[in-house]
Image: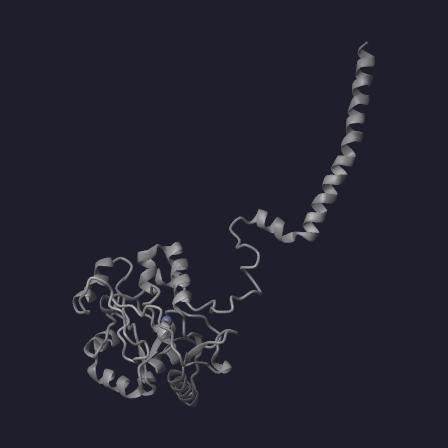
Length: 299
Ligand SMILES: [Zn+2]
């Protein structure tokens, strides 16, 4: 009996194995098929954090420069010389006292006005410049058709040529940004860093000088946006000379209490050559100087 049972069991096992083999073969073929024909599917399973297919790689959104914003990790650097803007939310409230009064944000009447006061306490609404032109390709930091208002673009070129003549160079990594682009950009930062912190290095929609079409973020060729830009040769050259071409550094070091933004050595706004000379003479931040200039608001 024992012998028979043993033989029976062995036979049963063999039979089961025989039945399993085709099943395993089918599974193997299916896995191989998935691997070769749907590598993205397997990749997604393997890396839950990786962006969805299509986000990384070839498809650039046609209306938006991808690397326009400042890299947030550098802003978190504790060894930054600036008094930390991140730890001091009350400081940001100070400009309130000297800005135009009113319960609601004053809406800038004319975004074309070169001296429009763009701050966290004002808004451009959905202003769009009417005279945007494409910046010449040789100034692009990325394969993206950056745009500026005509006059700002012309002066940017003159400044670029002057820098070249002095042995320096820069590229444009961000220029005009529409209300909706800024809205999307800020939403991304707010999701990653929280709204309050995001607003120390990125403007809310309607409050970005980039919406004016007169403002650029500049980089050293071959590099991306960095807060060490101010220490580079071209960063120093620009800080000293940009006013001659009508461009002003909007957020200089140590001015967070006035501007509400961190030090942005790459961010230059065109206000006109004569205006820039007058601003320089005044020896104050651009925000303070613009507050002294005539401003008009929508009703
Ligand atoms: Zn900028």
